[in-house]
Amino acid sequence: MALLLHGGQVLRGPGPALERADVLVEGDRIAAVGPSLPRPADAEALDAAPFLIVPGLVNAHTHAHNNLLRGLADRWTLEDLLNHGPALAGGRTAEDHYLSAALGAVEMLKTGCTTAYDLFMAAPAPTVDDVEAVARAYVDVGLRAVVAPAVGDLAFHDTVPGLLDLLPADVRRRVRELMTAPAAALLRLGDETIRRLHGTGGGRVRMALAPTIPTQCTDEFLLGTARLAREHGVGVHTHLAESKMQAIAAQRRWGHTAVAQLQKVGLLGPGFVGAHGVWLTGDDLGRLADAGAAVAHNPASNLRLGSGIAAVREMLDRGVTVGLGADGSMSSDNQNLFEAMRLAGLVGNVRFPHHTARWIGAPDVWRMGTLGSARALGLGDEIGAVEPGRKADVVLLRADSTFLRPLSDVLGSLVYAETGAAVDTVLVDGRVVVRDGRVLTVDEARLRARAQDAAERVRRGNEGQWRLAEEIAPYLSTACRAVAALPYPVDRYAGPAG
Image (cartoon, rainbow, N blue to C red; front, side, top):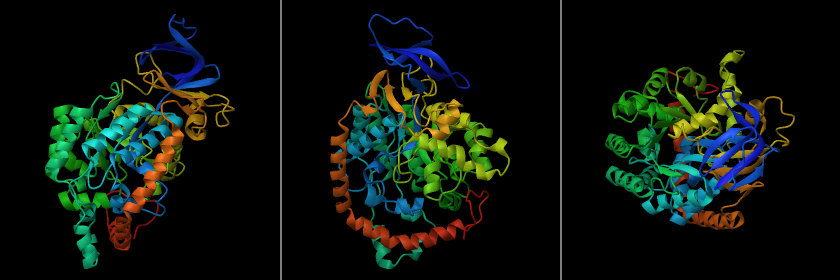
């Protein structure tokens, strides 16, 4: 099957910049880009003159399970969100996981994102059937994805310094009853899902490993994850120094940072992605750069949860690969990479008053959302650019969009002005999955109706876990405020802690 996108304005090159050109797609790849390409006899033609042709955006960090219950987190920190984990992610069927993942995949396609790195969760841990359901959702909707079930063998509440000592005895007893899966079971889960599901959907869905937060993992589990990653040649993705609480907890447990510990157990390398990295030290950045590792920057959730402002300028200066994530919709509200790009281009400016050369400009942000994220997913030579030989993951934006006219600087408009509203047509693997702004692969109305029923049932079924989380909340806040006031080598807050 061949498709000729004729006469569009193609964003390409090292700049990149727009040029009027045709794009020939043959099978799942871009065969040629250039003016007035001959149309193969068997090729369908699409008049692309009204469109900008750009590479599909790449979401370097998200959580499929969040889509089913988003909108519930108002004034929550990251620790509040994790405290509510059993209430949010527990009691779900495999079908619930399918619906939640499919919702997010549809939203990403409709806003110009063609690939995602998904760390979905279940409480106490996902089953192989749950993982299969998430993979199947991505296959059905047509999104490219790396799926990594996020798991840990230590309970979250045990990792917050001082929390258990603050809890009343009856609450502490109920917290102790919250289950976690043992390391051996989680390693078996990772091994089986990789063997069964890696490369499904014609290769569009791959598997990876996700020790969810280093401090929620025993050293036995971290070492086992490193062994599995080497054995299967898959990536590893974790939440890395996302909050100050995590950074302090790591220092207390190991006597050094989480990055230093991950290096010690053999997890750092070109296939490693650390999400957030808000509280990384200078030494941490050096270790990540030397290892060829990547950071998935999530500006929306870092702000939403009050975690801090990541030192992205320093990451780039040290040569760390930086990708861009929307994060889960419980902590960032949506899966819109255009919004994530805008925030990424703005949030760090206040760190360098009047030193505008240190600000993150539109070209850097665009690279994060395309080639940087592609590299983080291990697809740096496959996606992220409209060039011959790459996968045909392509987005056509209406050039006369409210947000793109008048067009003075294309990257400035794409990063700071466009909202995703201009997305008209999306190709993944050379297949048209969105046309005229409508997803062609699934019945959106039926999907949303089923998801609504599932969301209401999950909320009703988890009322007990929700009440427990609310009882814990004031004590958790006290413990976290005390940790936030402790000294640390870096400060990523926008105001005084304490």
